[in-house]
Image (cartoon, rainbow, N blue to C red; front, side):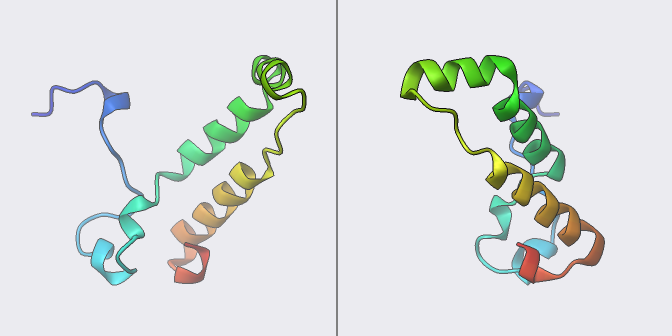
Length: 83
């Protein structure tokens, strides 16, 4: 049994033999829900205030949304173009 906390464990969208099937970097694809959470975190008021305080501007969070949509499309279609 893995005694590490859930947030300390690495999770991947692909399992087992799928990892080799989609190329050497397929292990880097996180579960789709992680991308959605990153997008929500990036767009939150707290994050926006932090971004503005640190850099003087707010970050563009669209890449997190795009990653989520691509991951979700891959999950449904198993088309490697979405990786």
